[in-house]
Amino acid sequence: MAGEKILIIDDELHIVELLKYNLEANGYKVIYELNGKNGFEAAVEKRPDLILLDIMLPEMDGFDVCKALKREKELENIPIIMLTAKSEEFDKILGLEIGAEDYITKPFSVRELLARIKVVLRRNVKEDSSKIIKLGNLEIDMDRHEVTKSGRKIDLTLKEFELLKLLVFNKGKVLTRDFLLDKVWGYEYYGETRTVDVHVRHLRQKIEDDDKNPRYIETVRGIGYKCKE
Image 1 (tube, rainbow, N blue to C red):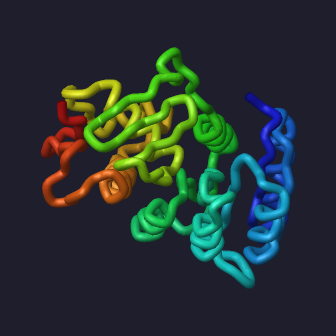
Image 2: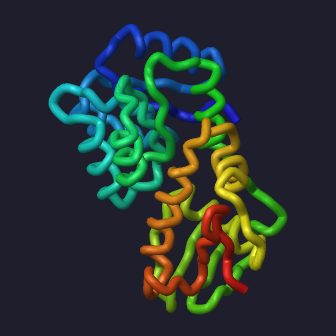
């Protein structure tokens, strides 16, 4: 569904112009800033539907921008795709750890980036979406995309919610990391199954009472995860 507003935060003007041209050609509305501080302020003011965020930025780097956005209650659920020349695994994992939805390195395929943007923006509204699912002391409102634990609301990112929903709908079944990547991210992730582990760990920290003895999400060694029956 095009028409969504995308904020580009990148200090390389030729990259910005390339992205702006292709995004607008695909129906998106585009705004941009050339440094991290102005980018953060633009996100606060404009409330985009998605942010393309470079790491190496003047005034405020991409990691700090991402962390600042995730600290803001009204901005924390805006999906962020890290767009950078850095390709080291540490940088990828750090980006995911602090809340980025995805990570793509320069040089990149515009077609691939557009596919990833489409997946991140996609909202799956299924026939089960209006149900409220109860799981132990958890209550999952599929319509509102809200989870409460013992009556207290838990803030989940979009990917964490989608992972939980998929596991709950397949309770008792072992779901492989590749399957979770395909269903939640919606494209081939080039073997980067580590991103599933990162998101599952964050999800567990929020919904479990004891990380060492998980009550809801069980790790199946060498395969993936399942929601306990």
